[in-house]
Image 1 (tube, one colour):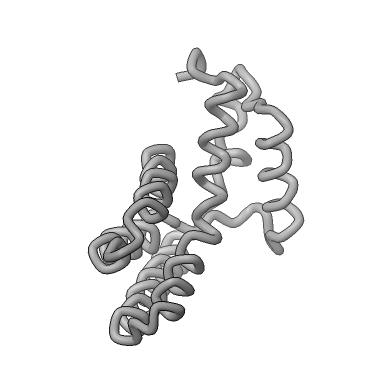
Image 2 (cartoon, one colour):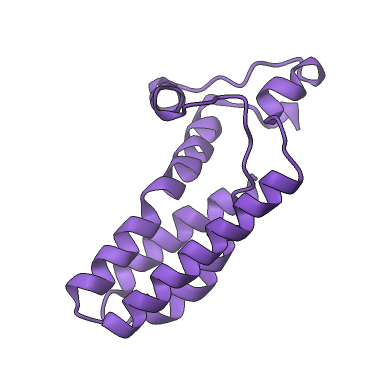
Length: 141
């Protein structure tokens, strides 16, 4: 896969991964602003449940992320442009313990499989774009 390491693709994947932090907030905010309280409550439950399941998985199987544990397997550095540097620097500044690795696929999958059907009503263009971004991040986990 190292032949696919090019700056523009690294930027796209970095942005897709970064979207994990704000897309659920956007979706919950839109549901709240549209006064769709039943969907809002369910969305909060699904997100919280997904995060708890993920956290329990981390407690049972703690891990160190591949950027630390598998460094010796890479012969090409994962370099992007200023976009990748911004994402990397922002996440490094916000993370308290940089060596932990919490499984992210569970809350992402739960939230997107749940949010898509209820959120697109009346807002299909923005949610189509957000679905594309979040789905692309699932491909690279």
